[in-house]
Every structure is written in C-alpha cells, then in structure tokens.
Image 1 (cartoon, one colour):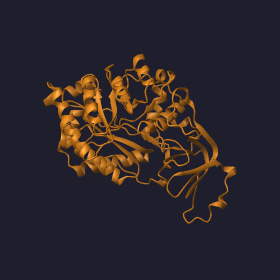
Image 2: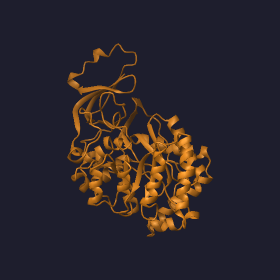
Image 3: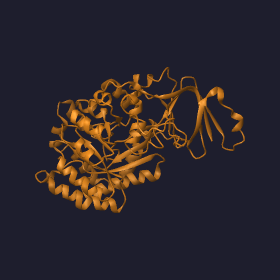
Image 4: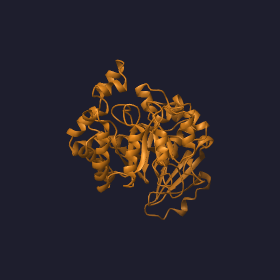
Length: 424
C-alpha cells in the first residue's frame, strides 16, 4: 500500500461514476486541495481526502506500507490516455520535414512516393526485432511523459505480411509493458502505388486476405480506415467495416482531415468507438455525432505540424459534444508523443479552457478506448495510473508552459515508472 501525502492539488476526481464529460461538463474538474491519496496492494485507488482527515496509524502495521510525501505545489492527476497513435514504425522521416519547409503539401509529398508509402517501403524491409526495439524506446519515452494507456495502429505495412508484423509487434509491447495498449488494424491507411489505378482491388485484399489473418491471430481490437479525399471513399470504407464486423472488430475511423468526405457519417452509421482528425466538421456532422455514442477525437499536433486548419473544437463543445484529443504520434505528420503539448495546443489553437483540455486527454480519451470505467479519472477501484507534477503555482500553469516537461513522476497501476529511454 502507498499513501501520497501533502498533495497541493488532487484533480480529476470522479465521484459520480461518469464515463465521459460533454458540452459544459467539460469545464468541470473535481478537485481537492491539500490532499492525500491511497493506493492499495493491487495497484488500484483505494481512497483520498483532505490531509487533516488522514489517520496514518490505521495503515502502520502493513508490511508494504509506503508514504510518498510531496513538495508544496505538486499536483496529482490521472495519467494521459493517448487514443490515436502510429507508434510502431521503422524509421523517422526528417527528410520530408525539409520538403514541408520548402512548401510542399502533405498530398504532394504522398504523390511523389513519400508519406505513408515511404514508411511502408521501409516497413516491409524491417525485421521484427528491429521494429520492436524502436517501438519499445518510443513507448518508454511517452510513458515517462505521462501517458499511461495508449492505442497503437498498424497501417504502415500495406501488405498482408507487413501488417501482421506490425500487429505482432504491438502484441509484444502488450506482453512487456504494464500500461493498457489497444491494437487497431489499419490496412486501409493508403493505397499502394501498384493499386493506384485500381483501388478496389486493394480493398479486396484488405477484406479477403488481411482481415481473416488478423482475426485468426487475434491481433487487434479495432479496425480503422483513412476515409478522406485521395485515400478511401465512404463506400470503400463501409465495405471494410462491414467485413470487419463479422470478426468482432469495432471501428475507429480517420475522418475529415482533408475535406467533408462522409467519414464521420460512416463512422456513426457503423457505431464507431471514435472518429478521429475532424479538421472539417459542419452542422450535419455535429448533428450526426450528437445522436451517437461515437467520440470525436481531435489531433491538434497534426494540424500544427502540417499547417492544416484546426478542427472547430469550440463549436463542437458548445453544441453539447464530448471531445477527446490524442497525439497521432507518427513519423510523418506528428512526430511527438507529448500529451501535455496536445493539452496546450487545445487551449492555444482550439480555444479550449484548460479544464476542457484536461478532460479531453483523460476521461474522454479513455472513453475513446472503452476504458473510462477504470482509467482516465481518479475513482475508487480505478487503476492508480497517475502523474505527479513538478511544483507549479497553479493548474493552469500546466498548459501555459507549453514546451516544458512538468511531469515529475509517473505511476502505472500503482508502480512508479522509472525507465527513461532515448528517442533513437
């Protein structure tokens, strides 16, 4: 058992048993000043309260009893939940970064064989051990930055064997890391060059070859499709989702990053757990989401890096929607796994209040991974997935200092995470 004491501010409490916060609820954060928090021997939250009510004598006879005393100004909060990443990839793409600086767009780079297709070529050549070691370093790093649950997609294989290789790497990460990891099959991430003139043939490969193999090895919980202009149409998307449903794979859709392409409506129609990106959202899309259980998930770091328009987060929240945010960590359009930076972008670019940004990267992003019943907030029985910040003057300071790592300690299921990996 552990007791964290002298917590200046304990935030993210969930005394109402909420699974998400939407609309005006996103402005609310339950919190206690000058608090303590109890973690039981199973790594779950056992209780909390104000310091003046703490009676240490009732715990003193326990063999594993440990007190973690904090400094003035330290905040304790739920760990970040990153519900959209492409963390498994063989190499970085800093060369394309220079191409962007010279003025080339994401679509222009893709037409020249860059972008997703560039990583796909390298993926097909990479060995599984090389792939795992690179991904493990990145996962170590994002945990040290406060991420305590994560989704990881395939999608850089674009062939049956390479897609399976990626998903097997995700399974190995699950076996070797304590955090919750959800796997998503994204065979329909891009159309390979050899199928550019016949994209439906590639869709058939996804449906008839890839999906049965993924299901046979039980490698994924979700299926994703890049439903956008220049990638997969709404009709192709629905064909893949219908096939995936037969194997019990739930949809999580890349939608409306590049235009109003019907991805949101397709996701809602198929009861998608989330629809992600959403730079282009109109009244029809908002109405569709309001009538669904689908979580709209915004990826501000991608808009920041690619100089895209930003999703209309303010309009979405004011319309009564819940909104989640994720990093989209990948080598081509969002080479960052910092969820704290995502929070800051939410305030700076989406005009979210700090409280709204906080809920978007904790309880709402946990909902987007179907784990908000035991993660993403502080409640009795939830996993003790926690961030302890460095001493700060206020909660708002966390988003105000957008480029500073203010995470001091991270706990995953009650155990402190002490590995600090290099990026490369």
